[in-house]
Image 1: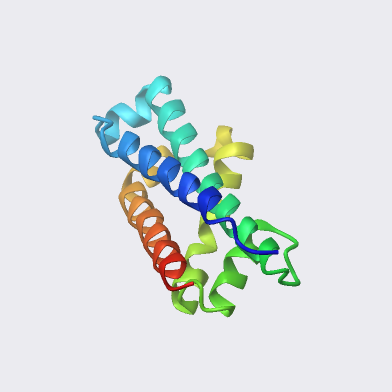
Image 2: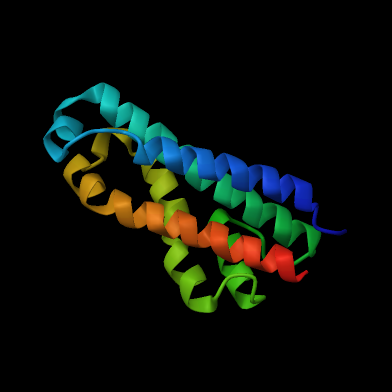
Length: 140
């Protein structure tokens, strides 16, 4: 089954919008720690951004009929094994589904100080994911 580039491009547009929404948020570490509205908004936007990446990875690995698509981590790593993402980046980016799981299931255990320290690096990883996927689409 061929990769539906239109689906991937629509997902990439959504990802770009969520990244921009997060980057446009104005909050400090202290306000994130204390304000549940900011916590919920950042958590939701990060969750959806990662979910979009997982959807992209799942679509590509399904279209290519790659075996071993048992989890979100698996589909990210498969993209690295097939050279769609660099292997090094796919190994790093496998943390994204784990972040999503924490945001969804560990909402009462989130360390918002740690999230504040890491979220800009997470955004950089989301951008790198999008860049590598776009590069793959342009070549294929």
